[in-house]
Structure formats: C-alpha cells, structure tokens
Length: 185
Image (cartoon, rainbow, N blue to C red; front, side, top):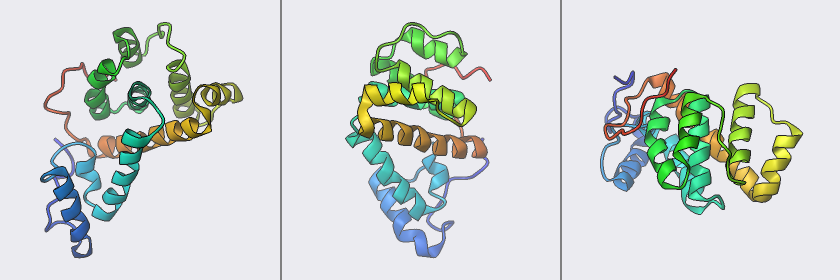
C-alpha cells in the first residue's frame, strides 16, 4: 500500500487547485496510481513535469524502443518495481528482445545488442552505478544519437530517475494490469 494517499482537490494547497483541476481534466479523472499520484500532491510541479514528459515521450528524436530501454535500465538500476512493471511489456512490444529485457531484469550478462541498444544500457548502468560517465561511453552515445539524442536520452533517464525516487520513497502500488515478474531485489 502506498505511503501517500491519492491527492484530492481539498488536500492540495488552495493556490494550486487550478493546476490540480488542469491535470485531472487532462487525465480524465483523479490520479490514483503511478508516480503522478505522488507528484500531484504539488500540482504546479506535476503540471510542469508533465510538459517535460510529453516532450520526451512524444516529440523526442529517440525511437520508442530506445525510450523504453532507457526507462527499463533506469528502473532496474534504481530497483523501481513500479516503472519496471509499467514498461517491461511495452519495451518488448517496441522491439526489445525477451532475452535483453530478462537479462536486465535479472542482472545477468547481456545478450548481443543492436547498435542503438548497447549505448543506452551502458550509459544508464555506468551513470547510476558510478555517478559518472566515461569518455568512451559518452562518445558511443554521441556517435549513435548525436547531440540532441544524447541530451534527450540523459534527460529521459533523469526524468525516470525522478519518477523512481518518488515511486520508491512512497512505496506506490504496482500496476493492477501487470504481466511481468517483479524485479528480484
């Protein structure tokens, strides 16, 4: 059970109710699950984060497969059950192999990866484990995705890091429609 109950219009500060109403309207109703169910406790912040999320998910130069791989790498490195279970199946649908998704989940040796996959996993693992990125990893990402793609990829991982921080801190419930195994932690 989540440590934070879902926000209501009455539970948010009065000066942020317009932002709350805007988010609820855009989402078609109250936000009961997922990281946004935590973020909406600060509606103006959630509204601003939503703009970044929309850009990263719908307008970025990165393919859906690369986006999903970045989200899964971030979820695994930060042990975020919610994000993992919300994205593992969509990663598979976007073209990630079962072998790759399962190896990331289980922290096993990775199978041979496509040219656009290895730089993503290496960047995420290296940064989240060492808090730095080597010149070799940086150059591999830059060669594969260019400056814009590198910037969008690192920002996407940072954004999902923000979501994972909130999800893990508040112990939000796993998605009801989950089809994936939980992360072995």
